[in-house]
Length: 369
Image (cartoon, rainbow, N blue to C red; front, side, top):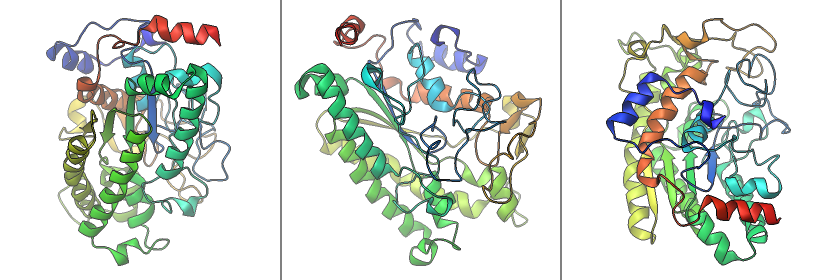
């Protein structure tokens, strides 16, 4: 899989421009990759939950080798593609099914509708909040400690891993801008809400650090005011902007605060390397080759699971020309561009080989189990 990764030409140009080390198949740049986030990275953790927010049915996965797996797109999600770019030979397993020595290469904790705030997304059913994902990670750390034989060895190993965290989207989509379910927009101004989220997030990221994370890429909230669902729900109120400005203006307050919060953590915590990954785009999507930028490729449901694809209906055939797969989530083609940009942003956390923990050391542990 890693040796056959399909990377868009634009991604190659970006990497070459930065004189990126030669990509080598079979030797990941980090020993393991841990993923925290929402539906943008969920690869099956919501499948067994009592929730409307799951994607383990057709037409999801129409372009994925295993079909519908719980990924909220037609093919690979952004975490899958980053794993490919890192050099892993397989995708990082979801926490729901990760077992045994497989966890040594990392775990994906992502959950559709999850947020920084515990209540976020509850109107759709169960989900695994950031707090709960951190609790799951503590279980993984204990398992890795048992596999490697001591907490010291586990810490040495975990310190060399890459972690990405992408939270906050649902705290706006499935909380602040859903006043029919949540009081947050009545209790907080947009500025106060952003400040509250940042404070909570800072404490959560410090917990992640205490669990052994040192190399952490933190994604900002994306252009959620530009998603087909929000456009259909709110409109642009005659604005010349193609997006819902009230949403994007609120999100900007969060994204503006996030880099400073990460700098504060870097200054506070020894050997911490938190990096901001900006997922908002200054590029016009049409200039990147997309022909449809404000409508979903699949027929999106407007009833129970709003914004998700209607089960078993055929989606558009020209999927590479669409930015959005459903009412919220990017197509695989858009994910390729997002992942390539994220990979470049994460480059200060990466090495061309696995630091002092060689691949052979990792393999010897696995073969001895």
